[in-house]
Image (cartoon, rainbow, N blue to C red; front, side, top):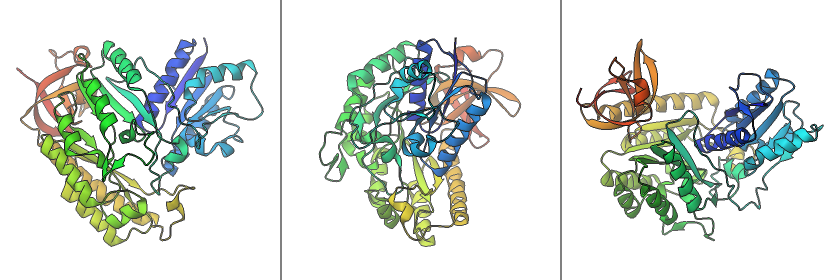
Length: 456
């Protein structure tokens, strides 16, 4: 039985695709082993969202070849889609599989091995300019997870000035609703209680046939995505639905109101911001203002009780002055997010931002990043502490040792991490994968919310 090892870099979409590739190999008789062990085939699902992601992707490809010089090393995903010319000459890489080709992994491997390999890396790339079909990957489980990621959309038409992803993933493509529902039902039948709907630009789900794009009067057309959520909400055994990152303009009173009427929908919303300065947003080609963004957050807070709103922020974008950065910081303080994901601007060759004037020095980026990370920690601590003394629900996942004591940890619908102290009367096995009613107490390490089972 040949052995295969897989390593995933990047987003939840990548995680879904890596799991799908693993299940393809298992169906062909491969034994899956940890990546740090010797294998006959190594598959690295790469990421290219930043220069650091590029570097990590290259490092993992070379690490695989060092683990077993005789192994077949497969480079897959976003980084290889934009860097295929250099990877073709890389001795560490045997097979290159771009996006929308991952469903062919097992067949590509079989063909490569039958032909005894080639002098140059075997190349299988997506035609970015012309690909319009959604790749029909599927899952029957998610290894190591108590929640399941469901990929429903691929590609992006937005072309933000800093982003390489439209060039790596292509145009918007959506999965048929019937296919999504079948997969969710299968996963639920295997015991998954929560699903996370993911996509490269999730708000564009079902919108590829709109000639002028999905914006109508300043709002995003939420119809196809809302219809899909409603169908998932009707699956009897499913207990939680969580959404991936959303376009801010999809949040309207109708969209938020109809979501709030679905008890299975988790009140956890990731609305990408990137900057709290209107002038910076304009240079980024983000098509909203801070005033508009703030209004959308207000809609969510009027429809849901204390929703968890999280966001991404880029610091050090070309031309970002001290004054523009301060505007961003003040705006973040005004919104009061649950979590901030802070990124230092990373120049991506082939994007408009890469050739913009007034590139910000790295030390300045680092200082601004540190400042926002401290702010994010403060806001996160403030939000988590609101739950002290309340009765809440937690989907328990795994046991962890914290300060020398063993806890069972999991997440609330708002994605606040909670910890239950394990004792002789609490079975780790019985709790894993279960949703329990608990009473929240104090914060542990400013991050974890200590909880007790109701009735204890």
